[in-house]
Length: 130
Image (cartoon, rainbow, N blue to C red; front, side, top):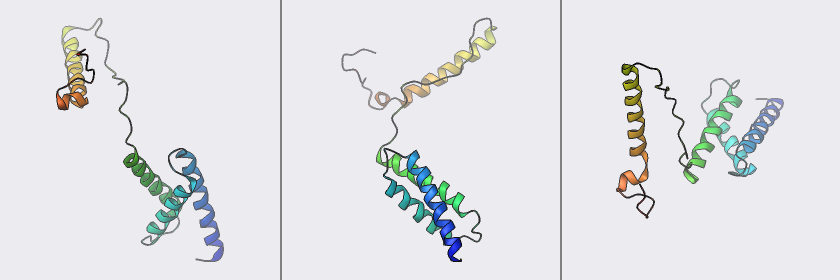
């Protein structure tokens, strides 16, 4: 690789690091993101047969690594609500109403199994409110 190519690659990696640092603001410092970008590039370049796509692959690989690291450091909070797209049974025949009911039953069962109190059998609210 000639010196001009190295400069161009370094500029591309620096720009990738800037974009990812912006995305991960508040989670990682710019220096941490930049280190992950350059380490990712080095790891990919070691076995790459074509250098043309390395910057794009590096961005994706570094992004995935940072997402994984962010998740390990602080797993995402459970959603406060679920958006179920269940059709309105009004005006439907009984076969369709039963199908909607069964779909709701499955959704609610999955939700109950997902909730932490389902695992230990105790409600989060110690007042005994269901």
